[in-house]
Image (cartoon, rainbow, N blue to C red; front, side, top):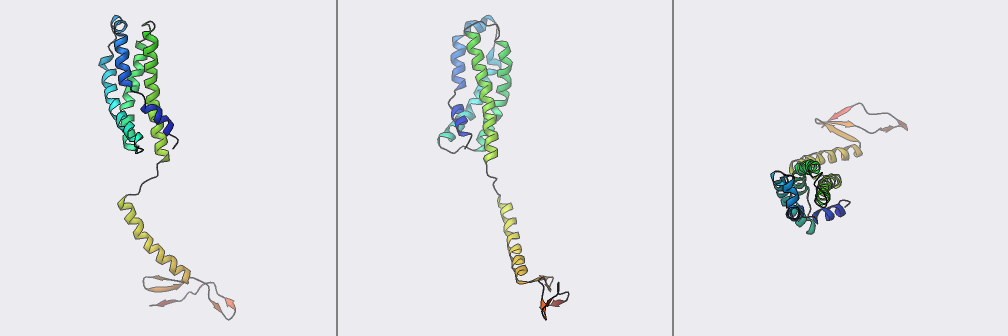
Length: 185
């Protein structure tokens, strides 16, 4: 599957853990600029990390599925917007805080985009499933179509109890196009 290398890369990142370490490391710089990431980024990372952990387990067990990916993408979309907003906020913090926080926030937006790509690739490679109702409808039609096909091959078809000749009949060495007479059963 073409999405596997990308998923392998995405499941290895623990953005919540990285965020906790960066926030502690740059606490003074953030406080000096009065930047409060906990109002938006912290809760969004918490919501994001839960489906990522679930997908990680499914990925390791080789049971990755579309609903699990959809949950990650649903959590990633608001996180992407929040991280993009904070990219402007960290400008002017000064290095190393600005450089490290910018790299971290860009990493989040890259991850969010990556999950969208994985879901797109997964949907394109997924085989459509047939439900029980659809399967029953096809089975019902199959029998009728199979009988009709056999009748056409035999040269006659029955419509409402009337046999209709469907193949040309040879009479005295000449071929007539179709027998227009119908015979009652």
